[in-house]
Image (cartoon, rainbow, N blue to C red):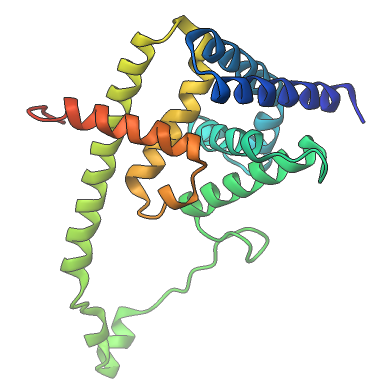
Length: 227
């Protein structure tokens, strides 16, 4: 294996030991050690994340790609079993799955016609001549439009709530040492706000992070104005 793969193995082992120690004896020193070990793991994984971001054609949304990869890295580190696979193999699949899902959400299915989208051109004159233009009227269009607008507003509100929470969380932390960890937590909380079944898929420690974050958000949300 390459030196980079070996470095990732060492870093994830260090993080697992630090996180185990934190779970056994919570405290500022243990939290700082866990944050530093995760930050080192994230730094070592960064070139790999950039590579997969380019490969999946998501350079124009690199920040979103980094967010989903932070989730993938955190999940991989939490559930990694050295007896089953190398960490590089395990985390690569996590990155690929998250980025493929992101690409599908943003761009749809691009697997047809050499990755070029194929669209069919319909003649309105032909439809009118045949008297079958009534299908253009969509009874559900207003409902779907209103739902889409509501979803968009909800997403913007969720972004603002999570961003404000992250700012408060950063202000209470010890400088920039926990930035990588905070990015992963921010992505987890944001995902929980928009996915009804997200909590069911979380590790116990992640559920604890989400519960505390939601309590903090609920405490600060009343009376706020969102634009």
